[in-house]
Image (cartoon, rainbow, N blue to C red; front, side, top):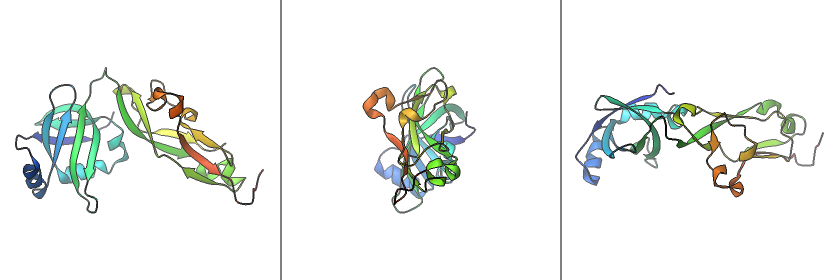
Length: 196
């Protein structure tokens, strides 16, 4: 479980004008839904900006302190300004221990420097995805998923079904069927066909 905490206050002043005024005062309009009625919130921009810089912010259970009362929650959406370092809006979802969550978890690619297809065959690694959408109970949520590249050869591609997942964790895409077994990473063969 994450130790990231976000402090929020409920708000009753809604609408575009109210959101604009909040942003000008250094606050971020937000909403939390799930496990009860949706609630409109405000969060200090500085605090939210700092929290979202941690990789685990997007893939772990956060503690959302609403008016001092803690709720376990996950971030569902974060809207950013296209040109400035400004968060425009945040969506959170309350969770409970007995309900599975679906969330994107970062992929960590291991042994890329000693990958067979790179070191011995002169190929190069091409990442197709840096995130894996998983479904599991909150207690089983991994901070990241490791992909070992050591034995991957030139011309070889790894799909979702090739990724070893922790016990109790499933690929949300594979739950939709075999035709959702998307490629994750491949080792492109070297030009000139160097092969060992």
